[in-house]
Each structure stands twice: as structure tokens, then as C-alpha cells.
Length: 251
Length: 353
Image 1 (cartoon, chains in turn yellow, green):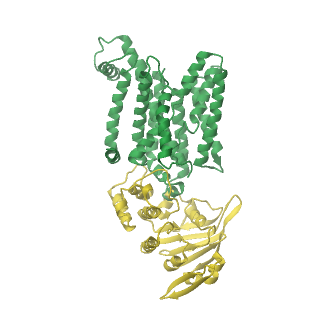
Image 2: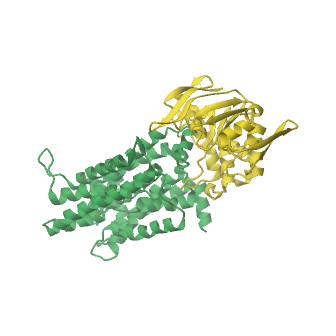
Image 3: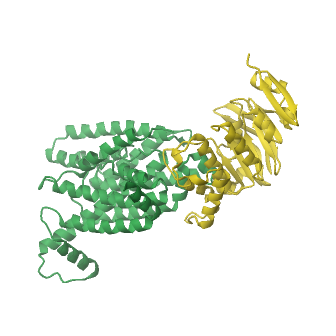
């Protein structure tokens, strides 16, 4: 579904991604892990055309992503990024409806079906009562859920999320991850929380200093030695009923 | 009360636009009838409808009255309409480009560039290759285009224009150009020319003639249509450029359209009316605080609001201390400056992201 081949990206001569390759299969749930500054966001931005790689290829549904227009891309993949601030206020419904834009002609308005889709998406993220509220008045977690609803309205098979559980309390984190898991979409998400990554992802892709150090099944990737190498901390791992539990050592 | 108005404007935008259009027509008629020589509403209607559609008989109406109405007051009112709308649309374009509700031609230094060009043409006498002296309007046009290019070029780093840099560069360029203009005015030998230049720097609609009106009106209509076509992508861009890209917007193209549009609007408006500040700032702000930021609503409502505001400001400029006419820029600044300050204090508007 999504293939990244030998991608390199640098800014002002500093290489941020070096020869990264990644493959995502239909229906997969891929977690991208790595310490701060390892290039997770940069890799995702290269995939969703906000940044342009100097080298490498990206293939989406068999088509060359780098040759697509933004509009063509927006019909195939939806993104929940890390932009939450704006000086301009909209109604929550207006924000969610922006997800329909890519399949509309410029002068075409939103119709009853679009509004129904928007309302349904808001219901899925537990924000059904918020459609007439001002977006800027929402909390960080609520904004995040509205942006997920906007991505759902794009009706794409693939969804890319950059740290979707940031700003969320633990309850909302679990709810959000359940929602993504049950959405039937192929998911690629940059994550920080190792327990969550272990629980929800079927593939973990680890970046360090802009290089892909390892990828594979969570149980094989999330190990004591890997965590030590990435984050320079010690951890006890144990598994119970097939689930992975982590205990961080603090001294 | 305010909530009700806000809901009405938001849910029935088209209906409100029609009401505002009716209000605008009445305002234009009022502006035509008020002045040193008062002319009754009825007479104004008769003369206007007669000249437009051949209706009514104009017997009993003096030639001088007909001439005042048709040659002086009608162009002035229409110019007020076009300039008010153009300044507002130009404000909306710049605010969308910079993603900053405080951006406006006056604030970004583009009006200063126009006044430098105009004053240069007026006081020094700049000659064109044809040997003819450059007109004030042409000077203003060239001045604003030069300053737009200057501001955008200086704000540009590695192919990108960061909104925060644009605003800061605008402040600096504006200060330099204003100093240059002041130098020209201060050292100018002829006093009459100085007063003319000053009036122009302060902004005004007096001296409007029929031939001055067509271009600003055409530019206003074209850019209104253009902005309405890109209203949806503009909304997406207000959520951030990255978000807009992922929603399918060709951000680079939209930005180019916005630069072109704001340059065209500002230069034509300033060329015919001088520096009239704060209209492009105040009107979109008031409209947004009532209906939110959806450009499909903000653009038409602001256009009508900007026209109404400027025509009424011009009526005030004529009526406050007759027979002396104040430059309308003084009125808009006295009204707009405090609103600008209130905007900065009341909400967490900040320069940059």
C-alpha cells in the first residue's frame, strides 16, 4: 500500500534522514518509534508532501507519490499532524468539513451528505455535541479528536498520524487508539509510548539519528537492549496473557 | 442581542448580504445628497435614475445641481464604495497570506510605498521616457508595487516567506519610506504643493472624477470573484500550511494568487485615494468576530462592510467642520487605531505562529 525506498532528506547540508526504507501493508498498524530528534516527524512529513526528499522514492497504491498533486494525495491518505494553533476561529463542524475539500470542485459547496459524514465522524470521536462550538475554545485533547474526525471524513484507506496521543489523558489515549484500531484503515503513527505501541501495533519501525535501526513484530523489537540503546534507560519487561508490560527504572 | 446578530449573519449570510446591499445603495444616495450644497433625496434619485435609465423628467432642476450630483458627488460616492471594498479585500488577502489578523496594507508598509511614489511625482516632478511629467496616481501605483516587491523580497528566505518576517520587514520598510516622504515634504519649496501632498498622504476621496472610478471598481469585482473561488482552500490554510497540504490544497499557487491580488488592490486603491489606514483591518475583524473565519461568509460581508464604513467616514469628513473637508484617513485612523489596540489587548493575537 505504501512503500518508501531509500529516502534521504537534508536541510542546509545536515542530513536528517539517511537511506530510510519502509513498507506498509493494507490493514496494517505501523508504529514509528524513536527518541526525540530521531526523524519521526520528518519522515512522515516527507511522506505527506510537506517536505520534499532529496533522494528516494515513495509509492502509494502503486502510484508515484512524489509526482502526485496535493489534491490527488488527499484522496488517498489522511493526516493528523501536530498543528493545533491558529489565530482564526472556526466552528468545529467547519473544521471537520474541510476534510471533504479534496473531492469537491472549488466552487462546489458542502451538501447534506457531507454534513452527515461530519456529524458521524464527530460521533466516532465522542465529540457529537461539539459541532457548533468554537474550535479555538477547545482543550488540546478535544482539538486532537476534532482533527481525527476531519481525517475520517476524508474517507481514505490510509491514515498517517504524528503522535496522536499527545495532549491526551490516559483514558482518551486508549479510546483514540481503539478508535484507530477499529477504523478498518491502514494506520501509520509516530508514537512515544512504548506500552501503547506494543499493544496496538503489528509492526514497529525504529528510527535513530535518521536511520532505520530495526523493524518488525513489537515483541521482537521492544526489548531491554533496544530501549537502552534508544533512550539510555533501563527497563524490566514481562509478558502476561500475551501482552507486554514495561516497568521503567528511575535511578 | 449580539449573539442573535451573529447567528443571523452566520446562518443566513446571503439574506444579510442583500440587506447590506440595500443599505449600501441608501448610503450612496445619502452621500450624494449631503454636502455644502444640500440636495434633497428625491432630486438625487431623479437625477441618478434619469442618467442611468432615462427615467423621470429633469425639468425644474438647475443645471448646476445636475452637474454637482452627476460629475462630483456620484463619482465620489462610487469611489468611496470601490476603495472601501478594495482596502478590505486587500486586508483579507494579506491576513490570509500571513495568517495574521493584524496584517493590512497600511501596517505592512505598502501604503507608505505608494505615498512615497505619489509625493515624489508631485513635489519633485519625475519625468517619464516620453518627456511627460509622471502623474500622482501613476507614482502611487509604481510606489506601491515597488514596496510590495521590496517587502516580499526582503522577507523571503530560501524560497519561503515566513509570516512573522513579512510583518517585521513591513514595519522597517514602512519607517524608511515614511522618512523619505517626510524629507521630500519638509524640504519642498512650494507651500501649496506641500499641502496637496499632505492631504494625499493622509488619504482622501475629494477631487474624484468619473474617469477615476472605473478601474478601482473593475479591480474590486475581479478580485472579489477570485477570492470567492479560492475561499475553500483559504479556510484550510488558516489551519496551517501543512494541514492545508494534507487537505489537498496547492499552497504555493494560492499564496501567489494572494500576493498578486493584494498588490493589485492596494495599488489601485492608494493610487486614487492616498493612504487610508485601518479599513482593511477593522472590517474583516468585526465580521470574523460575528461569523467566524469561513471565507465564503467573511469575503462578501466584509466587502459590503468596508464600502459602508468608508462612505460614512467620508460623509463625516465632510460634515464635521464645514466648509473645511478633513482627509478621510484621519477619521478612519481615529476610529481604527483604537480598534486595532483593542484587538491586540482583548484576544491573544500575536505576531508569528
